[in-house]
Image (cartoon, rainbow, N blue to C red; front, top):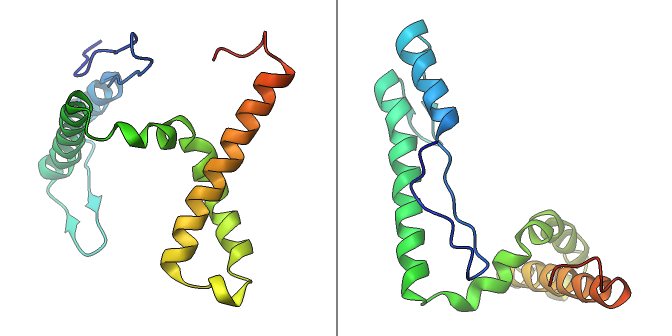
Length: 140
């Protein structure tokens, strides 16, 4: 298994890229003639080679930039957002829909900020409640 970024487990962060599925796509493309077409919002890349390699290069560049920013430590204040990313992802739109019913809060920036902050607070509160109720079942 090829790995671009090795896990950094001593700090509790796991950043690992697995390229097994990319090998399968490469086999499909070059041995069986599978054609790739990349549809963007305003562009369509119809050349199979470009449609295959552009997403790979973008993903690789993002992984390299994320690793470099992590090593610099400039964005450590964003860690709580990464700890609760999935609850924020699933909850923010529900929070925005509820808050949009209040006319004073019906502004895009306010809704966006409150959607993330309230979702973060609910997820963190739930995490701490579970730690209090079931201390032996939780890791941290």
